[in-house]
Amino acid sequence: MKKLSLLMLLAISLTACESINTALETANSVLETTGSVLGTNSSSSSTRSLGQGEVFARVPDKITKEYEIRNLVIYQKPAIVDKNRVKYFVSAEYYNKSNRYISIHISIPLYDTKGFNCSELDFGSGGLDKGEKSKSEDSTADGSFGLSEYPSECKPDLSKLKVYVNK
Image (cartoon, rainbow, N blue to C red; front, side, top):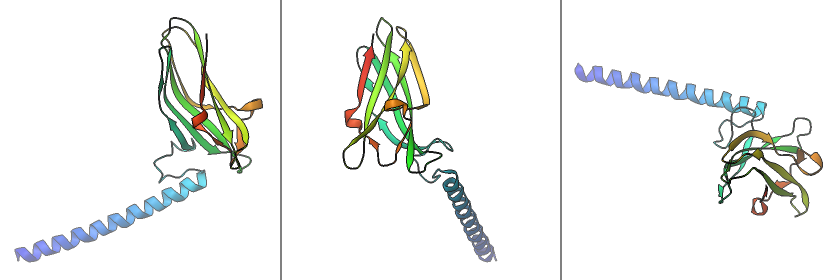
């Protein structure tokens, strides 16, 4: 009798697990469909919160005697009006380690699939007093001539990232 009870308990447990798995698969399917309708992919670990865009690149920290740039992440998101264009956003932390006021500016050129320069992403800290730190989240990375949307085939070339410090 005891064995029969254990077998029945095991059968009920397996049935419950199967129901839970089916419910989770349905929930995942709904989330993926909702994400694709809203322009995000909820199954990807490289996405941010709803609508923020996909991570294009995480840039290694840059540390010098004068300044630090930490946690630099570039996001891309389809443009709202023209789906053949993308917008880039930047999040970063800037630290002024010098004894004077500085401004940090970063430039990254964009190239199309044939190697032609399309534009460049321009962003930075603004001004930082001595010892000051600044954080930017989801700042629009503007390009040459004030562009903020680019043809989707134009991609940043991180090997050509340049940092300018104005004192």
